[in-house]
Length: 80
Image 1: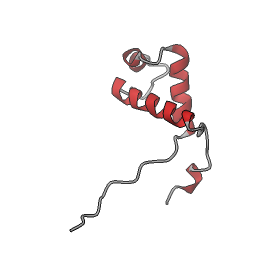
Image 2: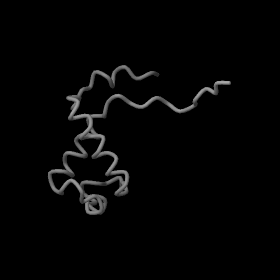
Image 3: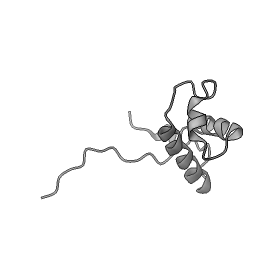
Image 4: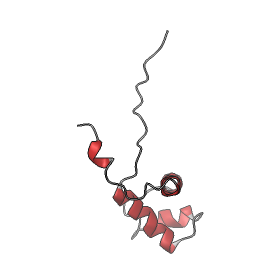
């Protein structure tokens, strides 16, 4: 028997604001200084944890390596 998965499919893009957030952190800090990034209240006003920032940075590098940087066309195709 097959059980339908209730998990939503993974996003195929990264929001532009999320990319700008990661870029601003990477301008100030080295790639692996997640704890320092998390403590920076000016650049991290939503108080993301080091683990959350690490995921965002890894995702950022994955998407920029694929050439999808700041591609907003996929954002317009979100289901209502």
